[in-house]
Length: 486
Image (cartoon, rainbow, N blue to C red; front, side, top):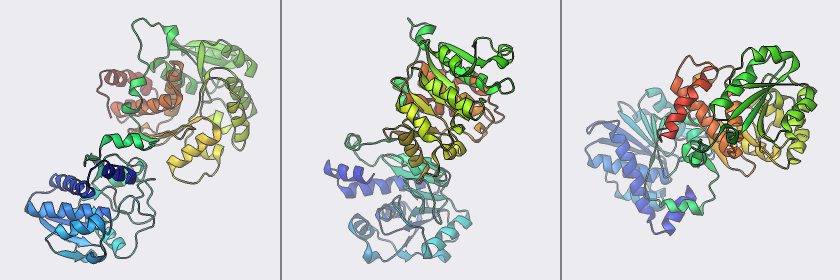
């Protein structure tokens, strides 16, 4: 965003115009919370956020709001655009003081922006505590003070915002937890930065949604047929653990794969056969049997791991799948089986001549496979993708999809009731179904995460995993009509 600001200036947009527009957007947002005559405290810091705050205070004061502006530090210490906007403010500037923040209708937070690199302490920390305890609504400028805009992390006191107004584009911290919860609702304001500056910035991080992958979604064509839409294979576990594979298979079928087969160990054939109709069944025995199934190149995507068991037999099945030309999704036990032996998995992935690989760990599986990687959730997913040579979908309420080339998407539509047994198996199946239809791995994983969340959000509380595939057609219909649910 700093580079976007600088490029906007280079393209002829005065920096003061950007600050004025940002302050105007903040003032407009404030008017949705309070009426003229009500009391608004504007907390200003020494940087650009403070400059935005001075503009908002000036505009609200002119509109007959009871504005009280509090500044962290000395007015004479302000520099650049912030100093100029402070000069233009014709009201009283008070020192930051937690004991003066009483009987307020709104607090505008312009203390510290997204680039804060240390925990907030001193008087500013006392102010944050007082505001949070008061229950007064907070409108944050850019990010709530104390929040890291790049990671969504909070290393010290953070203001809890009811709404955050940000500019041009969202930041990772708006989407990653705990930042997403601390920001409240997030609005993006246009402040005059030309959209073309994005072409001069190597953007590699995206909010997940149809705008990212929708143009490449594999819709059926009028002249198409089921064999043109790929053949997904889902590897079943033994007799006592077959349900996870069937959930995955149903997800693949509902995602549009032309054909779906459950590859079943011999002892589980009867159980699987009793539950399958549109999904086909193929018995196999051991890695050689799975390899024989995948010799048919029409079977072009395979999901392995759900309910499959942990240990050397699973490792050998994974290696058999990875030696085939099919795209491979590794989930659950397929990942845990390589705990402490990532090198073995990486070697097989690196030796592939065709087909994509997607890993879908939750946090525990990720830690078992990759160890203690440092950095934010976003950076850890990126490191995992780089180390494995595969697309990594790190599951959670803020699912991150990362590719080895550092592209990453952050998903923000998953409701809390999606945390249900078996929902991850369905997600693996949706990815597999999209890969079978020829979707590129990063797009397929990102689209699947969004579809998975949208189906759960549309269904509502009471969701169980079996509901997800059956609700996908509702979401797909809206997506096709250009009216996707959030």
